[in-house]
Length: 98
Image (tube, rainbow, N blue to C red):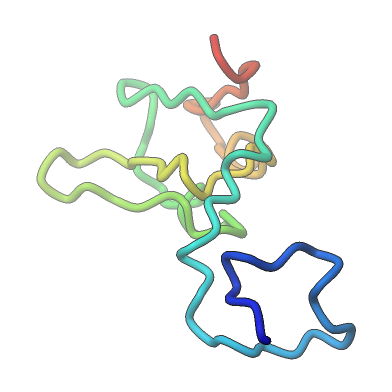
C-alpha cells in the first residue's frame, strides 16, 4: 500500500529527489523550522524590493494598497537574508516568540 505525502516520513522518501506528487509544497509549512523571525519597520523601508527578490522561500510579497511588504510566516524559515540585504536596516532578526 502506498502512503500519501501526508503520511510519509523522511525515511519513506526514495533517494534521488523523485517528485511523486507534484504541487504538494504548499502542504508543508516550513516556517516551523524558524528560530528567528524578521521584524520589519515600514517607516524605515525605502521600498527597494531587495528583501522580496532575495528571499529564497518567496515568503515576502508586496501589499500594493498599503505600500508595504508582508511576510508569510508559514514559509519564512528565518534565514535572515532579507535583513542582510536591506540597505537601510528596515528589517532586524529577532528571536522567535518575542
